[in-house]
Length: 160
Image 1 (cartoon, helix red, strand yellow):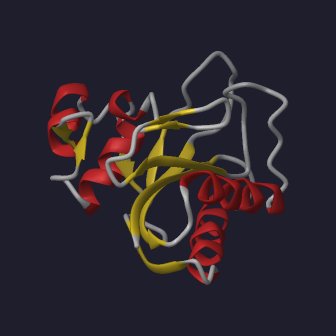
Image 2 (cartoon, rainbow, N blue to C red; image 1 turned 120 degrees about the vertical axis):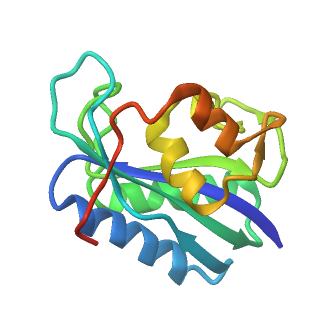
């Protein structure tokens, strides 16, 4: 069994429903034995495109899937919600990112582990720290990375 962390986000449509749908789809996979989810957090968008605020969460899973297969499952879930990848850093119904897979390091055209931006993004670190503040990412705990970058305006979202 392998331990993986997956970031969820989106800012189009019914944001809470889209995140709940992703969690439900991951949990329904016969290759995922357990799933724990953070609370939902609202964040301002990053990048040059004007758009609505995002809703984000992190889930921890125990899985028999290998990293690329887990990534493909996430992409399939994104497509189900109508995810459009035509605008880089643009609005999206759902984003499913594989953040870490045990302590595996991997660099392929399709996937880099751990996620290369995870240690810089409060919208990833705040919900991740809620789940496992002591998890080591690139040799430091999630709590340490979060202390370095700060919360950057990430706010807990009340409606689940």
